[in-house]
Length: 268
Image (tube, rainbow, N blue to C red):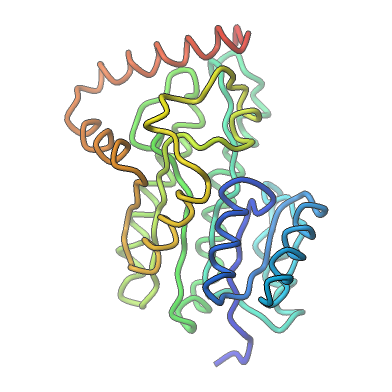
């Protein structure tokens, strides 16, 4: 035993699904460490959670795309006498546009955050997750089931998150560690603005609130589920994706992303 108290680490906790997940974990009695770049927002959320009578979350300001982020998070927690019981990898972003035309540095930064940081944090604390019978919740996307012309790199990163998380679920299950990948459809958060999406994300029947998505992810993790797709309509689409010919999926996504680029004024 390490003697360090268990804590839930949530990345991307300054907005959207990350904020909703923080509230849900805190409501269910878990002490939190909130990780993101925007200290003011993290501090505001920490104060909000403390006002409910829950322990005030630890605030860790970090750019996860920078090498060594997991080590710095571990050191910050150890200094507070804590270690991870759950790791929630929610941080990530997307970009609309043709891969050959968009800024290459931005796209590589997206891989650094969506793939490299998530992988590092998923593997860095396995021993403490085992000690505390905890787990990992990786936030993927319905995009992970699809090819993504028009958002090629983003879709590819989410395909990685899905594949990696499902494999890790099998690898770590014998050690008593739960691994769940949460694959939401469209969620009205800051993600769309960062990606360059305008004019609506998708039909209303596919769109869900950050709170409902977070609740589904939390329940799935606690039940030890491998994959969670929130919402009946999205579940049906996930099934159809597996049987529709790939060439038709490519045409469909390409057509939709072309319309998005036209509305957003992106020639890229």
